[in-house]
Image 1: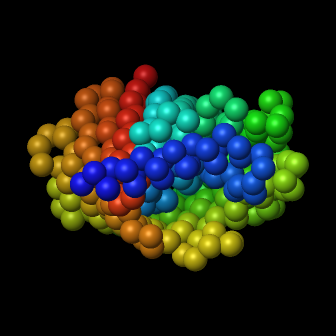
Image 2: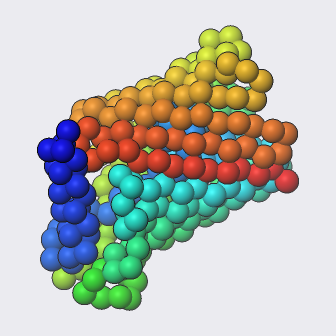
Length: 279
């Protein structure tokens, strides 16, 4: 037991050292997902239509019927330097909706920031589409000034039946990245596709495949249960490498809250929480 704790502590320390000296290494900037519901379902959320679709598939905000706002926080492996804060706002407008989102990952001498402005349109009863313009910036130890670039992402959602939804999303097709002393830190080009199906009123099954241009495909799946009114229980898995997630949520008429947990065999638990408001 002591050996396992020592191993976990050593790995966490190594991660912190790498982030503190990030400018000396080639390190890929990430397009971090957000929303504790999505986290609990291993981010198999490309087909979801909710407030956090500004991070997963902008086509999903077209189905948001009320002005909505939310805040998300994640502490990766319990390390403060690897914390993620994010927010999302969606304003319905006619047959579509506008969205604004942001995140900040990291603290002190290393930070990643993203600001996105989205628009989605309900094309028909079954189809919706969305696009988002992004500005992504980083702060590195050797240069405290932000270095950034612009890119975009786009997606569609198809609903062939009330209980069956499919989604597809493409991020950064222009292969944008940040220039640093170590060279260009290129953002990955990411394609995601998947769906969700509701079994009655009690169970939702979500599934997704994600492919980055430089990495193998990642398969993700999650199950959401409704054991009591307004109470949600969630589990998920993705791999390889295998990761397991779980969480729960509670919803009232205007406010909802979600908590998620991700587990890594060597590094431990990543807790997350999000709160959503409808005005």
